[in-house]
Length: 278
Picture 1 (cartoon, rainbow, N blue to C red):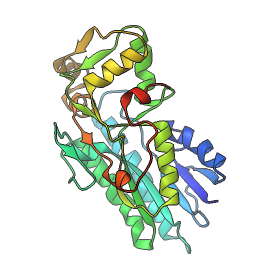
Picture 2: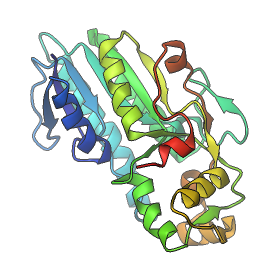
Picture 3: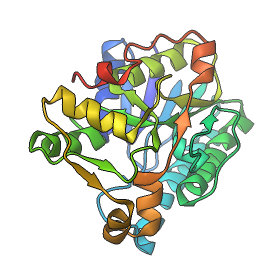
Picture 4: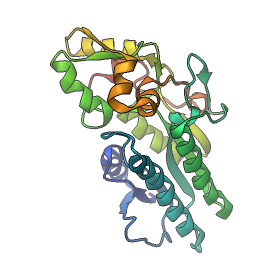
C-alpha cells in the first residue's frame, strides 16, 4: 500500500484514478495548489494539473493559462519534494503526445525529439520542470498522453451527442493520425508504473493509432449513424484561428508505445472498435 497525492484530481482522469487506486488498497489524497502542502510522507505524487485546451479560442490569455497551469503546478510540486527529508519515491507527471508536434505520416516513439509549435513547447517545458525532481532521487515518469477515451469526459463525451444527432464530421482531410488510449487502459498503466521500475518518457497510447476518418467512421458505426459531413480545414481555422485549429484538431501524431510494449504491458483495448464500447 502506498500513500499517493494527486494534483488535478478533479479532472476527467483524476475523477477515475482516485477511486481506482483506493480500490487497489492505496491511501489517496487530492492536492490543493492554492494551499501548498508538505509532501513529507508521500510515496508517490501524480501530477495531472492543467486547464483544458477547450473550450474557448486560444487568445494570448488562454495560451498563458494553458502554459502556466501546467508548469507552475509542476514546479510547486517539485520544489515541495526538494524540501522533504524523505522525498517521494515516484513522480508521475502528465505530458502529451503534442510533444512531437505535427508528424504527418511519420511514426514517433519515446526517442523522437521534441517537435515545433505551441503545444510542443508547452510539453517540453512541462517535462523539463518534472525532470527536476530527479535531482533529489525521485524516479520520474513523463506520461505522453494521447486522446483519452471515456464516455463521461473529455473529447469523446463531447462528440457522442453530436454523432447521435447525425452531426458527426470528418475534420479536414481526415488523413491526420490520432493517438489514443481508453480510460481503463490508462488506469492500468498507472498501476503498471507503481508496480514496475519503468521511468522516463512513456507514450500513453494504444499500439494502433487511427486516422481521423477511421475514428469518425468507427464512432458513427458504434452509434448506428452515418457520417454525412466534412469540416474543411479552412472553416476550422476561421472558427478557431489557424494555430488552434492546426495544433488541436488537424495535427497528425502517429505515436507508438514502444516502452510499454517492451515492458509487456497488457492493453485491454488495442483497437478502436474495442475502445468505443463505453
